[in-house]
Amino acid sequence: MPIRFVELPSGDMMPTLGLGTSTLKGEEGLEAIRTALEMGYRHIDTADAYDNHEIVGRAIEGREREDLFITSKVPPDYLHYDEVLQVCDASLLELGTDYLDLFLIHWPNPNVPMKQTFDALGELMALGKIRNAGVSNFQPHRLRSAVGIADIPFANNQVEVHPLLYQRELLELCHEHSIVVTAYCPLARGKVFDEPVIVRVAEKHGRSPAQVSLRWLLQKGCVVIPRSRKEEHLRENMEIYGWELDDEDMAAIDGIERHERLVNPNFEEFRRSDRA
Image 1 (cartoon, rainbow, N blue to C red):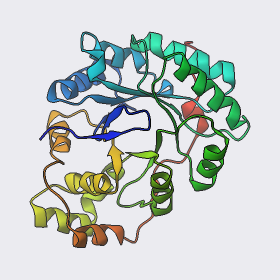
Image 2 (image 1 turned 90 degrees about the vertical axis):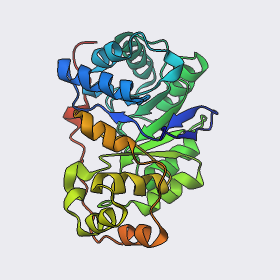
Image 3 (image 1 turned 90 degrees about the horizontal axis):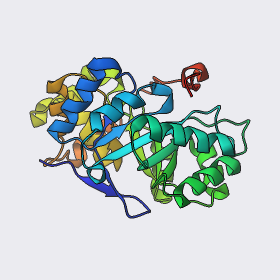
């Protein structure tokens, strides 16, 4: 079953399944990305902070650029106007591409006026260096402020969402403003595999807990970017189309009484290295 797409405000089509690459580095990471692309993945999610742009660039080399959807992100301590432009230029050079399909603010920084950052993203869109812009890790209060400040359409908010962290209010707010949500850590770093509700629903459908979790997110209107190095897991993650969870399944997963946030920002992890 082929990967399906969601339309962004620009009219661009974003694959609803992508490959997260936050820990994919070196030759092992290169091989994992190439394997995913050979299977039919077209959406590759990276970031300046992951320090793997060159690896992603090598993996996509020789492929039709228009067939790919590449997302990258600017670190929170480089959100001043000129810095955003510089990070984007460096990212394009490292990736070996003329444009990004999506460029996100990786984490909010309350010390930098959001208007300045959004103006820079708008300039990059006008220059054709990015096709779509958005944010990451913006919770409802900050997202509401951002929507009121920005002069550009928000294409995406990439946040931690999974069956053990159902951010209902945030998802509803994003849908209200036609902002596509990308769910990172969609499998809760493996914790969904032992959640009784997920296991029960998986057994009912003859699917794996991973597939049930990803399917639940798709039916919530999310894009999912699970990370994997293993071919069998990459292939398993692609088998989330052509079947559905019923209302009873969705309600059962919605009702899981756990709220486990796995990613808390340690900004040192998201600072730009000295390589630029």
